[in-house]
Image 1 (tube, rainbow, N blue to C red):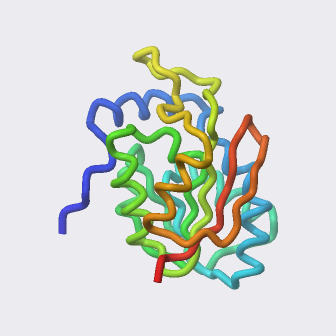
Image 2: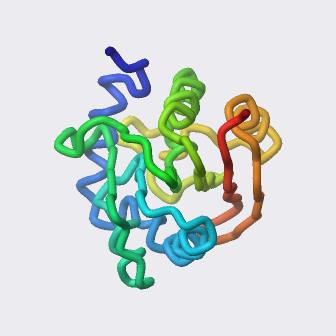
Image 3: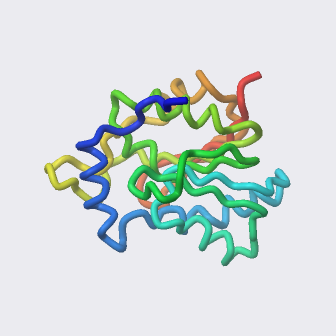
Length: 179
C-alpha cells in the first residue's frame, strides 16, 4: 500500500540539512515530562513518535522514569526508522508547523490513521529561530490555535487543550480518534 505524500523531495533535502545542526529537534525534551504524565494517566504502553528526529522524546521519557513497552520512531529524514506505526499514544511534537502547507492535511490524516487510542500533538504558532537554506523560516505554518483546531477536529476529538510558552507561543492537545 502506497502512503499519501507528506513531504516533497526538495523540502526533505532542506530538512536533512537542518537536522545536521545538533540543536535542531530538541523540543521533545521540554515536552517529555508532560508526555510522561499523559502515559501515566492513560496507561499507554506503546509510543509512536511522528517526526522523531534524533529520538529525543525517548531520551526525555527515560529521564522521567518511563520505559515504553515499544517505541516506534518515524521521520522522513531518517528512513532507517521505517514507516509510521500505530501505538497507544502517538506523539507529534513541534512538527506540524514545519509541514509544507499544501501537505499538512495529508500529515494530519496520516496521524489519524495511526492513532487508535490517544495522540499528543504540540504546535508552535510563531516564527522559529532557525531558517531553511532557501531563506524561509523553519516554521512554514505560523497560524493561531483556532486555525489548527479546525484541521485537527476533522480527524480527532480534543480531550485537552493547553496553551504554552515553552519556545514561544504555542499549544498542545491530547486527542482521541473521532467515533
